Length: 273
Image (cartoon, rainbow, N blue to C red; front, top):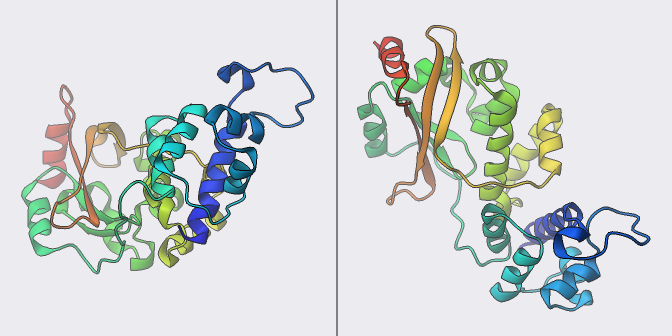
């Protein structure tokens, strides 16, 4: 693990520990608790590890925790599935990480997006830089083509572009969801220059991002309906999908399709006609 990954692991464990009440793990809530949540020694006891070793882990020391110990900590801290996966990735048990370096989208993936017709689609790197899109997405979000390359990042536009704030029907919920999903993906690479630059700029530009980032919350992606408020066609209810091409694992394709039982298909056809 790199120093930045060890630091993120330490801060993540500490944040989850402080959020868990003693009652949730069967411990008495009384006594002289000056800080919220569990004590380090309580986590260590419940997980079956030494207090000293767990303290070192929360201090970001260069130790190599086993998968068995990480699973025990996940159970002890009542982590969600997404949080458990994140813990494993931070500790080196979640598979190799892909680089976010792409100059553009491969031609065959661009053709795939173009073939989706009126369904908006775009491609992002593992650092969420937007490197390609189809005509339908440009009609949904006209500003994407005019953005400087350095700002053409999904997380950046969600938190800094007023047009995106207006476009997203539930900006508060959507922006928080994007942030937690990004952290889950990028956590093991927080020391990468591209990620460091993005997070630093967002912390300076957006109080909402700064507050959400400090929470260390993570979540996994799941296909769901999203609402957009478009200036031309009005309310659009679209189903949000995300897929990883097997021959371009460093990219993700994001596709929006018309939600069943809505007038979104007709509106998308009108928007792209």
